[in-house]
Image 1 (cartoon, rainbow, N blue to C red):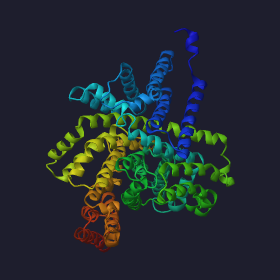
Image 2 (image 1 turned 180 degrees about the vertical axis):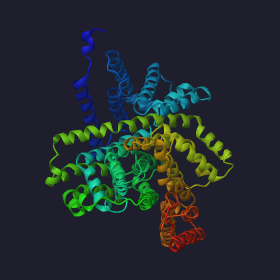
Image 3 (image 1 turned 60 degrees about the horizontal axis):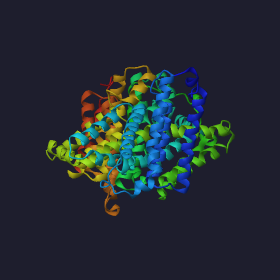
Image 4 (image 1 turned 90 degrees about the vertical axis):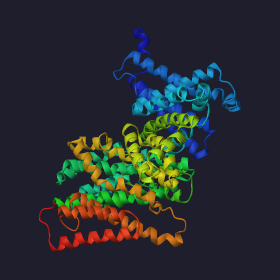
Length: 625
């Protein structure tokens, strides 16, 4: 290649301008379709994928060190990726008119199928690594070589049907995830992140272990904006972790609290992670219904983390931040409280039954005008703010978009081969028809899958292979799906990978292993509650008759709440006061009895807690165990 040809390739400021233009165009396209309705599903999903792949091949170069050959390769792959989608658009009448699995494929059909599959695999690899592409390759190779499915039929499944690349998972990314990520970008750019931090500081900063409680509240709120545990840690952590360390928390515990609180954003309504939208699509229910199911387990999760912080602070006599150093609640609400309105708008819209994408769009459109209302939030708002929010929204969607397209390859291969049915039978056989063993296998598989890929594709793989077995063994369908979602998420705080813990440990300058095990203790109920809501779906607010069962649900929720608090006490060495070793054992046993729904187990749990409290009051412990 000549120097003149190399110089003609986009680089530096030119490349940044191209990327920003594409990103803003992608966001504007999705805003338009949310407002006025999308085109045909395949066209809509194809445009979403084409934007995503173009940005991926520009933003994630094949060779890290800038070079002319690397840029040429990236542009070639970008062209092929766009060509694979455009081939569908150009031949759309042929595409919709042919009889699937009966009409023969032309050489051009086969060529562009191979290109589309390869570009999706490569684009996914660049964004999220090898785990998901390798998983897809294994299933495709299995379907092509080890089954009776003919290769042309497999090609049609992956490229020409809506059960492959252009399937419902990519549709979720295009319809739901893109709009909610945009909503989060507009909230962040309008100053809502600072509101979350100040709001949390004003509420709990001065109490025992205040900075830890600030991390819990602010991270749970910011989870509605970011949707990513690691991103949440990297935004909140630089503020909360040093503050926790300064007031006396151990570095490993500070990292644990931040990572656990940040991870919970994916399961906390009203705006959960991308996988929740996929669940709504799979179950054919409104997203608001999924959010309702998730409400009680999510509250138990955060009550547990909050209790862990409080007990750790009491045990090590960690005070809060002096009130003179904290923002006043009234001042925070007066100056920035109006920035909560977009979240309320989305919540009201979802509750009223409006579509989730429309609610997200309206919420996003509220952000900037509301920020302009007061001088305290107006200063940093310019046209550049809008541009940056549109730019961020598209870029932050790329990982989910590529993961959903690649997950379509897995789903297509599993569906065409019937592997899902075989896997279900294998799981049932391995579990010997015992639901608990099947749940245990699913939990382990979820954590392992989540270590190598984002939550959404990990959940999709579990739904394809494992969840049907749980349902066949008696689990209620929503509970089985929610169980899979929880354990796909928990990999973020479960060693050895634990990406959220790894990020927080770096900020805290502590051992990832120490932080990881502390995170598992702080989030212990999250490993237990999913088993309980499978056996007692009322914890997901799944009841047949509220008139007859409301009291049963209330008791189950109250006993589980006391249970997760007791579990935190047993694991962190404080309850009504310092604990002895046998106190901690009784607290853990009592907690498990309370978390498990049932009047007998509740009475046993309360009796054990009463023994601990009476013992602590009658014979106080100076040095906790």
